[in-house]
Image (cartoon, rainbow, N blue to C red; front, side, top):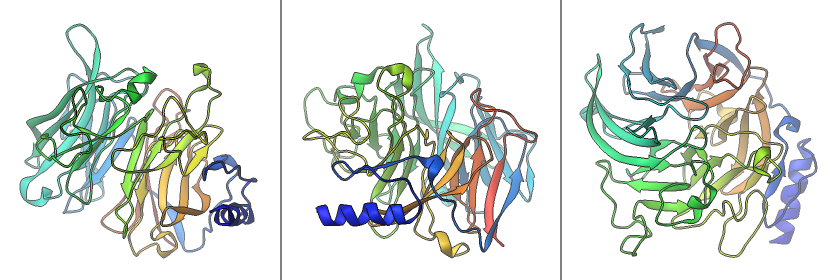
Amino acid sequence: MKPMLSLLALTLIACNQPAENVQGGTISTNVERLPMTDKAGWKLETVVTGLQVPWAIAFDHEGRMLITERPGRVRVFEKGELRAAPLLTLPDVAASSESGLLGMCLHPDYKNNRFLYLAYSYRDSRREQFVKVVRYKNDGAKLTQDKVIIDAIPAAPNHAGTRVAFGPDAKLYVTTGDATDWHRAQQLDSINGKTLRLNDDGSIPRDNPFVGRANVREEIWSYGHRNSQGIAWQPGTNAMFQTEHGPSGFEGLGGGACELNLVEKGKNYGWPEIYGARTRAGMVSPLVEYTPASAPGSGMFYSGDKLPLFRGNFFFGALRPGILVRVVLDGAKVVKQERVVADMGRIREVAQGPDGFIYFSTSNRDGRGSRRTGDDRIMRIVPQ
């Protein structure tokens, strides 16, 4: 194992990265010092402008782009234009900082059942904040609520998660934040700081790792997460990768240590007992930790054929310092990392379109960025 890690570190240094600090297999990286990727053969295009904190992007079977905006709107971009009227406006969204209308995904059989899933934060009658995941049906003109999939996930203005995505097993995965109460992530009777795995109707799969255990939430697939905001499965292996925000400086833990994790059934990813490159028996350290903080807001594997340079690579938007990061993997081994896009402000979502292009969104109107003319926007990477 040691010779392989040494070779990996040398490979990364050869790509003009800073010297890597490898502890227990974890690569320590400063994203601002990553080299820029080769720009031969591709360029950037602006697709949509005038959005307000777009958080999630999904494409339907007819090529329409669906977009969530943090204040509670689902927008539709089709035939080169953004519809003026939202497909849905949620009246009960509690939007601020890292909460609001967040994750979105389409059912694997969306073409036939038209089911769309949304995750959003709200306040109850006592003004306490929670997240719920709701299934809607799309009739083309509006979304109608069909079923509440899971509710009452404790939330807060920060660390509210939430990504929702169907895996290769046709199960619904939901990432939850620790809601700024660190120790919930280690508590198996809490659904905070977890990856949840559900059937498409919200019921619990019987092969989940903690089914049948007393005082344990059976929805849990993995635990020990601080605030995962990106989730994607690797083509060929079906391995789940997640991006996760590390501790902030004000928490007294040094700041930074954002993570790229290979997430597996029933495993403990350590927060808050370990984070970044730290290790402890029975806990999983990340593949990569990013210090200073990169604030990863998404995750995607590119599987198209229009941009062959990027095929099989993992991408995530880094809100700080505002770049699109490309990670080249050989299975679970990191081969190299690069910056693909910079100077766009804060970058959150990244998604592959049915046209084989890579789409990403800015988040410059979220209260932490500097708004630019046309923000927020959705861009795409296309062949030159």
